[in-house]
Structure formats: structure tokens, C-alpha cells
Amino acid sequence: MPVLIPRRGVELSPLKDRAFVSVPVALDPRTASLEVRLRRPTTPSPLAWDATGRVEVSLVLVADGVEHRCVGSAGGGIRFGIDGREIAEYVLRYTPTWGFFGARGGRTTRLGEGKASYQARLEIRLLRGTVATEVAVTNEILAAPDVPFRNSVAFDAATDAQEVSGDGVLSLSHTSAGADRAVFAGVGAGSNPGRTTTSVTYAGTTMTEMWDLLTNGPFVTNSGHRLAGQATGAQTVTSTLSGTAGEHALGVISMTGVDATTPVGTPVTTSVNDLQSSISVTVGTVGADDLLVDNIVGTYATMTVGADQTLRNTETVNAAVDLRESTQPGTAGGVMSYAISGERFGLGASLGAVAFKPAAGGAAAAVFRKTISALGTRTGSRQAHASD
Image (cartoon, rainbow, N blue to C red; front, top):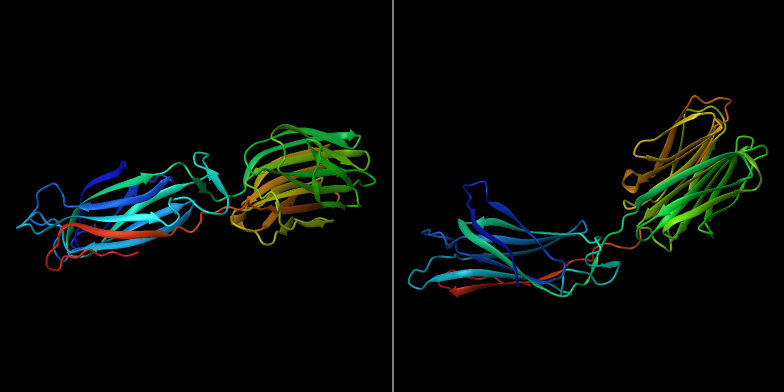
């Protein structure tokens, strides 16, 4: 049982500002139990912990951003030996109900993969009297368990490409990495007559089409596609239109932490076909751990990304067709917008957006069993309090 903290000289007095102290604990996720010992100081003092003194000791565990707290209290005095009357130390033992500070059920990852985040601390608060004590913490380590983590969709990489007066087939190389991967592809094109998007493939796998818009005549194409669990490493992404096009652009954004079964929510689209100063959509039912992705295609205009959005891909093809793609964290809400300026000919723009959803995760509820005991001779009103 290795000692995690030796701490000396914790003094709590109602006459001082230090009526509350916080002691960090280097908690290992493999911990099967945690033992806290409140001891009389080794530095001589007439009274280390007076008979009326009582402290509250809280074990606070923060597992992947979720705080769990277990509270105990001890009182009755820790004195230097006087006629054999003393309490040598209080022992508080915290034991998770499942046997270690890990989780049962939900998404888990093997310890050491870097997905699980643990922080712990002791909070020692004076309830009454005057207390001076030493604090020592030990723990019992088990073999590495599966430990919980909370997934949050994160940006991985972005790639874009264009062609002018091509055959309607445009390819680029994109590299994905990380766990629980997903990828978005947005297509922009200008032609007369307008072209639909026949397919977008990633490493030969056909991506699922979420929208395929024809606007401004219709002459301008805007389509959005998604795929979960795509191959890692450099892979070919190919956009195929229903015919040749004067301008053709393709943007690809990959992400990590995405649910494999239900990778996205409901996509939303809109278009403006005349001179306007802005365009926006509102994606519904957006969670804090989502990542929103959009694809806007405009003609002969300058398009500026909205608040809380990060521009990922930019293509201006033949000074006529513009493609922009951005991402936005779910904590910013569901509005994706662009300001439009310098537009010529009143041809407008179209915008599509969707929220990518996180893989199941989250720290399981932490429940602790707690026992408190006093070691030594107890007399008078000195008592050890125990609770579960």
C-alpha cells in the first residue's frame, strides 16, 4: 500500500482563514480502496486536537469531468498521551462499491490509452473546536481495469480540392486517424444545366448522402455526405457529378469520438436566391459533446464564417463558385451562419449543416462505502463516528 500523501501541520481554527484545506490526491484508477489517516502531529503541542474538535473529511473524485463526493466526520480529540488517555489517529477508509475506481457498463477503455481522466482531492473542513493534525493517504492497487471515459466529438483533419471544366469526377487524398472515426464530405459545383451529385466515395466505400441541393437557376450544386468508421491513413475520396461541370469543388472533414450506429442528427438546409447579407441554419437537438459541420456554396460572393465557427476548408473555383466548410462545438448551440458581401448578379448561396453525435460514454455513478475508526484509548466524550 504505497503512501500517496504525507502531509504535516494541517491546522484548522475558527480564528484563522484556514478553516478549510484541500489536499490533492494522486489517485490511480486501479485503486481498490483509499485509506485516510488523521494523526496527531509529531511536533510537540499541548493539545493537538481539543476534545470538542470535529472535522469533516470529504473524498472528492472527478472522473471525466463528473464530480463524485463522499463525506465523513471525526471528532473527540487526538491528544498526546496523558495518563494513557489518547486517541492515536482516526482512520477513514473509502471503498467503491464495485471494487475499484473504474466503471461497470457503458463505454470503457483500457487504462493507459489516455481517454480516462481522474482527479481526486481531500477536503478537510473544521466543524468546531481547534484541530491540528497530520494527514496520510494510502491506497490498495489492483490490476488495471477497464475505466470509463466521456466521448466528445473532436475535429481530426480537413482537406479540399477543385477542378475547372472537368469531367464531373474530382478526387483528393485525405488522412484520418484516431478512435470512433467519422467523416463528412461537402460538394460544390457550378454548371449549366445544373448537376446533381451521383456519389461520393471514401476509400471505395459509398458515403451516405444527407442533402443534394440545386439552386440559382438551378445552376449550383451543394451536397453533404457522411460515413462512420472510415479507413485510417491516406485514402482517396471521389466526388462524381451527374455530368460535366465548369466548376467543381470537394471538401472533407474527419472527426473522432463519433457514434458508429447513429453518427449524425437531422441535417438542415436553406438557400437564398437573391442579394442578401447573410445566410444561416439552426441545427436542432444539439448536445454539448456534438460537433456541427456545414457546407456552404455561393457564387460571385465573399462569405465570412459566423460566430463560434472554425473555418476548415476554402475553395474558390474559377472566380465563380465558392465552397466553405466549418465546424462548431455543440456547446455553442446549433446556429451555423455566414455573412455574404460583394455578391454579383444576385445568385445567392445554399447552406447545409448537421451535428455529429458522440459515441456512448460517460463516467458511471461513483458510490463509495465509508468506514471511520479511532485507534487508541477513548475516554469521556471522545467518540469515533462510523457510517456507510
